[in-house]
Image (cartoon, rainbow, N blue to C red; front, side):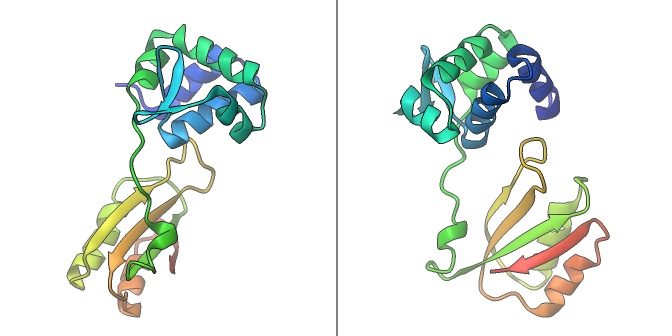
Length: 172
């Protein structure tokens, strides 16, 4: 099964090094935008070529060329026809809902980071409401966002920081 890093190499191969087309493809991956019948969708909501172009600060032609190039690759076609958005991200409204957000920054992407943080929270009987992990292949300095019920005691954060891969833990 291809990993996103391999997919990104295929995207670069298909789109060349055109930064504008790569920007469109990256935005589509970031938001889970799919291609269906030559149109772009966020779930079942049609996204106009013009609105995607405006969001990427490119012209409509660049978006159309990007879609056409993606559809010529069997692997990319399958990915962009099957991708789905992940749903609501509660980060900006967590406080309004009575939740707290942990923002985890790491030195490098390695297995076990989420498990380490989740274990520290579970030991303190803190319930996880949502987890969103930014993909380091798409976002430089990717972060892990964990939205929890209740406050996070300092000793729980200290426990998380015992993992040498974890660089910083911010609570908001």
